[in-house]
Each structure stands twice: as structure tokens, then as C-alpha cells.
Image (cartoon, rainbow, N blue to C red; front, side):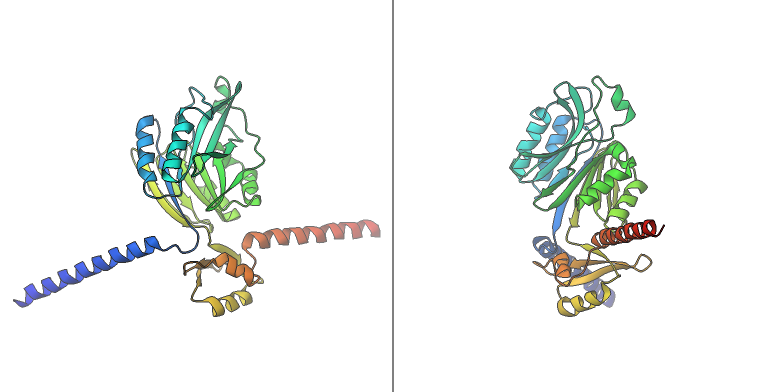
Amino acid sequence: MKKNNFVNYLLKLLSLSALFMITITSKINASVKIGRPVKIVSLCFENKNFEDIIQIIDDEGKKEVDIIVLPETWRGQISPETLDGETISTLSKLAKKHNTYILSPIDRKEGKSRLNTAVLIDRKGEIVFTYDKIYPYWSEFDLDPPVDPGTNTNMVYSADFGKIGVAICYDANFPELWQVLRDQGAEIVFWSSAYSAGTQLKAYSLLHHYYIVTSTYSRDCQVYDITGERIFDMSGNNITIAHITLDLDRGIYHENFNLGKLQNLLENHGNEIEKESAMPREQWFVLRSIKPGVSARQLAKEFNMEELVDYQNRSRKEIDKKREFQVRENNLSE
């Protein structure tokens, strides 16, 4: 065999070997759960045939996903329907068939009223949670009947994979709503919408340290990390089908009062968890599990480490107490 031919043969063999190794590694990683992964499908589209979307949901459900998310009022706002109407009844059957959650906003009829409602269906096909859009857009008040503003006080649902928060479209413009989602313990917020938002969602994920996943008419899906970074951005011209896997066991911490505990934690469990990333300007860092069956957040708690949100809440509470004490002291001295 000529030298050049031999070299080409060897390079081809090495290339095939590498491809084989990558394929095998992918299969192994797919079968091993590390942390608390949740497999998400976000569908982004506008004005599509009902039967076509149902077929896509049926196809995606076969992929063993945890939740499928749909855009705001994806069937339109011409004819409101009840919770036992065609849309939710059909989706309930698919959720049960594929053992998955489905989150679908609908234009909901409630007596003589109309609501813009996100309906969460569980793996058994049961409706387990509804969220009525708290801040309808102006044009929704021109409908007949108009969309009533939601009055939800419970905005978070505990699914079997984690705590879900929901917001819809124009809700993105009201920071107090996103604070409530944090206060109620949301780990991931699904935002179904007619438009894309962007920096608003980045700000909320940064401030409140939950994931945000979008499903929009704009045919783009974005995902924001607990650090505030946009970690996924996918768009298409027709229907965007986005597949995302997020680890809800990742925890974010402040360096204050945690560095010594972190060193102790890593010395004892460095083969089970790792310091994934650090943000020196903010003095934050993220921990994640690298071993199946190990929870990074639980281990950190066992070493008395305080997550960033808890640290902020404790700081606020203690400083407010000192402020109240100082006010009382000043009043007594007058």
C-alpha cells in the first residue's frame, strides 16, 4: 500500500473510531440521570391547524419527555372553550398516553366570563393546575366578552420533577408578579406568549434564580439560566420544536459565609459534585452533581451552605429588624 493511501486509510479509521465512541458515550449519558434533569419540548408557532399540532404533540410524546409546552391561546380567541372542551380533552388523552405533562394556554369560558388560562395536565391526563393571566393585554378587553384579569394567589405547582411557575405574555412587564413566583419557590417558569420579550426575562432569571423557558407565536424559543444567562435560543420559519434538558438540582450560592463550607464540601465529596461556574464580580458560584443519585443542593444543605435566594431573604429580614429597632430607639430618645 502506498504511503499516502495508508495515511488516508488510517485517518479514515480513526475518524470512524471517534464517531463510534461519541455515539456510545451519548447513549450511555442518555440512560444515566445525574442531578434532577427535566426533559422539555417547547412548541413555537402561530395559526396552525389543530390536527397538525396534535400530531406533533403525539410524535414528541413518544420521546419520553417530561413536559410539552404550547404558546399563548394557540387556538385563537374567537370562541372561548371550557376545560372539558375539545382542546384540553384531546391533550389530556395524549398526556396520559405518553406519561407526560402538557401545559396549554386556552381562551377559557367560565360562566359568562372569559379568561386567558394556562392549563397544566399531569401524566395521568388530569388537570392539576390552572393559571389565569393576571395582566391581559389591552386588546383583550375589546373582545366580547372581554378577558377578565386573573386573580391567582397560588402561582406555583409542585410537579414530580420540580416546582413549576407560569406566566403569560404581557405578564412580562410587571416585576411584582415574577417576585411572587420566586417567593412561592418556582424552580422553572414557563412563559407562553405572542411575542418574544428577551431582556425582561433575562432580568427576572438573574434576579430570582429560576430557569425561564418560552413558547411563542414568534416561532422562537429562549431559555434563561438561574445565573441570568441566555443558554438557548432557537427559531424557525414555520414551527419551531425545541428540545431542552435542564438540571433542577443545580444550586446558586453567594461566597459570603459559604467559602469555608464549600472547601469542606469539596474535600469530602469532590468526586460527587463540582463547582460548575463562578461569577467573581457578583461573588456567586453554581454547584452541580456529577454522580448519579447525588443531589448537589441537598449535600450543600447538609454542610450548612445557604442558597443565594435564602441568603438574600435572610439578609433582608435581619436588616429590616435592625432598622425597626433603630427607629424605636430614635423615637424613645426624642
